[in-house]
Image 1 (cartoon, rainbow, N blue to C red):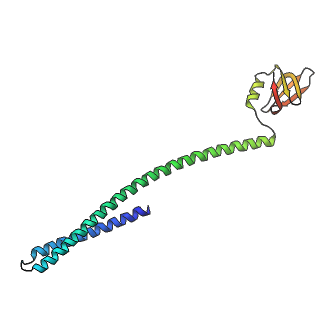
Image 2 (image 1 turned 90 degrees about the vertical axis):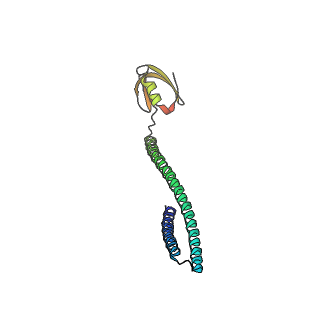
Length: 177
């Protein structure tokens, strides 16, 4: 934004100088036309000044055009940058939302690890569908056969034919039949 303000400041200054020089040109033109025809040296000097001023005005007009073009380019760049900033802000908001969701999941997993309860919805659903049915569950510690009596988020309870109640954590199960 600083460069744009600087260019606008110079544009105003150049236009002011241009206006002043045009007024001087008009004054010189009036003086030339009011001179008696016999004062050739003064007319020559005034015409020389007039030509110099016209050259300076042309240069100022050229600089004004260049600065206006640069100003337009800067405006376009500013617009593009504002669009990019808006997109980045939107992406930032989405990332912040994802970070919050991930942090919530991490907190839940940490709590589950601390409590020793690691839910397994697939296993829970599997055993819930077999409630009251006889199943054979293999673990590294042995094989158990019994009727599914209770299903939790991380374990299953079966009653063996002997009447023993066995609670088996899902994490210990290697196979189920």
